[in-house]
Length: 278
Image (cartoon, rainbow, N blue to C red; front, side, top):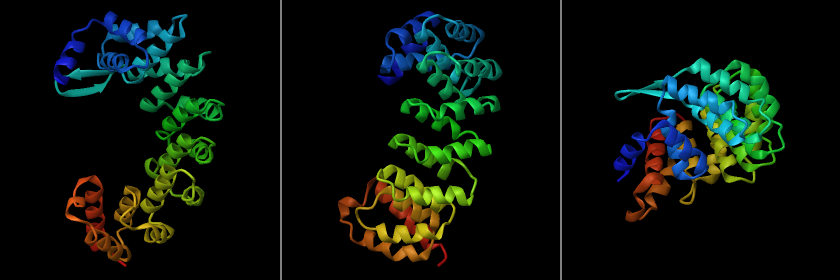
């Protein structure tokens, strides 16, 4: 059934896909149409995206940004970016649009297609009053490793909105390879956040950096009710100090509990800590 659905949408004309994307905005059908448009990397699609981006209608301008954000080309089983510089230029212009949804679409696109010229505007928008826009900015900033981007993420990791803090903590802890006292301080602070996902991403970041405080935290939280975050952190830390508690959890599981993703993460943690050092 899914294969049939894909074949049907691939046969639709450019015009029909654009019409569906506009009429069914923010529905599964609308997003499937956008995804197909993004896969038709060719001059007619690029020209259509540029025309949409010049439209008086913010909905059409937003769609133009969405298409440009991930315009790719199929070549057999291979997929590659199409018209990278042209679409980046279109997205950069979208950062200064008068409508927030167009700006948000441009911001998201510049996460998929990073460009150094976007950084100042992304940082400017990171203080916007709309938390959804701040979230989109945070996601995109994870693709930029300049000091200014990291400083913005450090600030966003203390945002008032859970989803923004969550993604900023993920960016700092897992997407960025930088290891500075400032980053560790923010990760340690967020390890006591009220949101479980923020705490989990902070733990992941500290564990990836081999921070000794993460070992103590995991020791305090390893039990049969622990989350995948603790198990993944144990695997990253790979210390034999965690082996006993991990094996105790495994030994206490019933047969029907020895299955699924959580159990596979437990097994990986045990294997890593068995081969680890004290």
